[in-house]
Length: 245
Image (cartoon, rainbow, N blue to C red; front, top):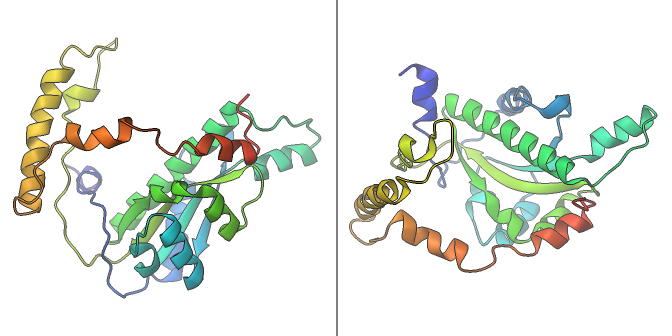
């Protein structure tokens, strides 16, 4: 493998960090690398909040479900889908701006995700570790209040960054055959391939925990699909100005 592919395939989530701080000029370079990701029509529909205030970090950690590494990592970023800046710019240029469209929500969320993944890859290339924090959507209104987010901006996820103080194994992924289709969608082999992956994940969990975790990928999915996950998000996004028309 070339070094880039090797870096990508060695990704692990890091939740324990040393006390070493990331130089701020390096952090800015990571953000700059993030900006070079693909963006729909050059809209660049994202803003990143660098949360420095320790009280705010602790509050967000609690809102995200008690994830203490938000407070402990060197730097914590909140990646926000932002349609405010671009629509305001279009308005100042003389456009009769239409806001809150579903496509705008999708564009902003996708732009933000692509940008964040560039930041993640750049960070890992510098020997840093990271962990995405989707838990900020547990209480997006509370996070938005802390960060003073305006209308047409919403927090998609957070990212803990720092120097790793752990070396976890790479978590297995589904086999390529399970996700790569040729010409047309087909799930003819899904049951077989998922069963094989379940065995792989069971072995991974057992080895990682010394036999204390005896489960599979399919079992781990059950809580995600037996209840309505974050049902508050629809009303929250509407209140953010995304009417989803």
